[in-house]
Length: 202
Image (cartoon, rainbow, N blue to C red; front, top):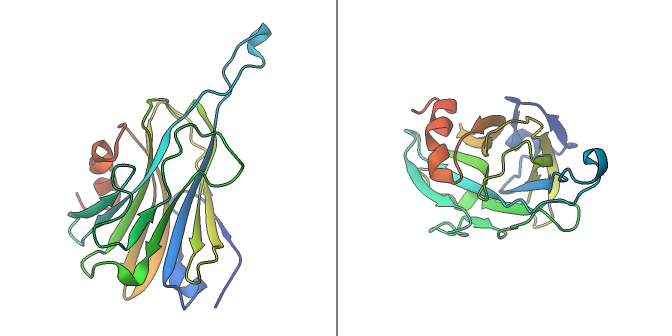
């Protein structure tokens, strides 16, 4: 079974395995634009400041213990099942995903139940200074990405991180949940208490 991409809101859940019964690999893409600085007359115009957002993926067992983490300091999980596309340090560049995390679902360690996907502002800008942030989840089973769902990260505020989404294995099938939870912290470790609470694993 295949279907069109689903537009997701905060806390929406979709069963990825039912969208594609042959699902074996997914990709999560993250995009954003730096907000324009307010310069010139009446605060108009201005250039876009660099914004270094970092996408990460935390592999968790059923008790919430961290099995491994893929982020800009470790771009491939120790078992090789998850890979990071690389660090976009400015937010500038062509339209489309700025960072992507690739997941081979069949190669995940058997004790991994949940994947927690996050984004944080390593350079310290908060989400009032970021525009057009979104995440997309793709079916990557054939190596040609097909969008399954997209989620706009529209919440503004002084937070520097967002627990974007989770992918959880239930009865052999994979559920994707749009979390959209604002978090403090400039790096993934500082966001873990919020992540575990949201997943009811704390």
